[in-house]
Length: 70
Image (cartoon, rainbow, N blue to C red; front, side):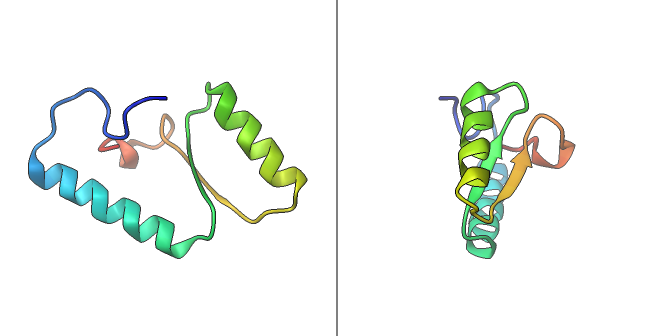
């Protein structure tokens, strides 16, 4: 699995912002999937969650420039 913050060096402020945003997201949704569209494991997890009828929120990190900090 990849790094949560990627390979770019980030300032402490940027890392704190990312952590705060992640905490906000996971506290607002019972199940959260941080995904990339080309990730087979992510796709399988989304399929399984759908099969069991789970309500979940997906963030496609490679499609949203907002999530570049991750």
